[in-house]
Image 1 (cartoon, rainbow, N blue to C red):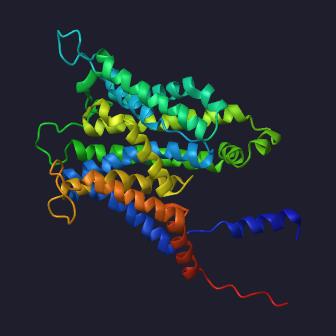
Image 2: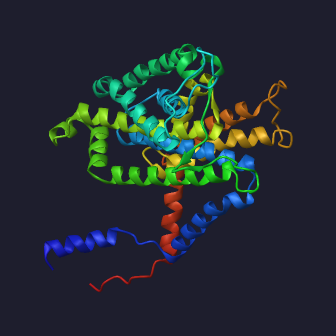
Image 3: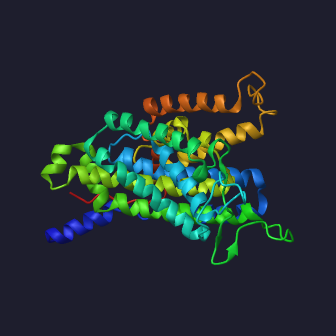
Length: 376
């Protein structure tokens, strides 16, 4: 057998084909996601939309932190750029006759969504020269300034952001098809329609990210993460690659922020504070550094858990309603996140994605046909 044939045979053996059980499980999961709007209420649909928006933004951060080895503490700033960018591009004069009120360009919402993502990418490109020169904790400290800068702009640029009171997000529509509740004659309302929009955007975002990390850019990111000297020796432009990863992460954050604005219907500056950047780091670590699927799982936990605690605070033990003086839903969520991060770092450094890979490997080994060892 030639070397080429042997290499091809080895590569073929290295690629695991999905077992019938895994295919059936994937199809069942897809069917379940598509049927969710038919049997779940508004609370669960809203929580799912928040989680989808967080997952899209987290995918960009896991590429930057997990794949490239760059630390960013300013992710909340780029979510704000995407959220307010969508509101400005799609919105008009919200209070006619009031000059101080927020205004907008009145673009079609679908174009405004794309424009918000590109605007966040431009903001990332403006910071890219710094991101290309700094590394690790130094970039993290520098990126914190973006959050404080964003807070100042959101509170004071009232004609763009609405100031302290925030501004409304225009209902999404595409090609004349509106996502609002319509005339009320159908049970399939705005949240049900937005659920499919969120699924589509998340699926496309994950597909693009998988192609990036599995292709040449992803290999350049990983080489740079492991050793800047080795990356430079292999012909990787260190500064340009770091800057590219930062811009890509910013665009993902902008898209997630725009979807968050659509799901909320109204945005305020307090939403995009420094705590939100920390929560995204929690998502990346909890889901598994560098894992696209892990970022999605981590976002479901970090964004979904506080909502569930808040909704069921009166029936859950050890949880008090907000403002009652006890341990509130947000506080309990942070305690659990802290304990989960410690557990992941000590016992499962691959995060939720690593646990999933282990389970899939065991399932594949159980269903794989037994191949006898060749005779000596």
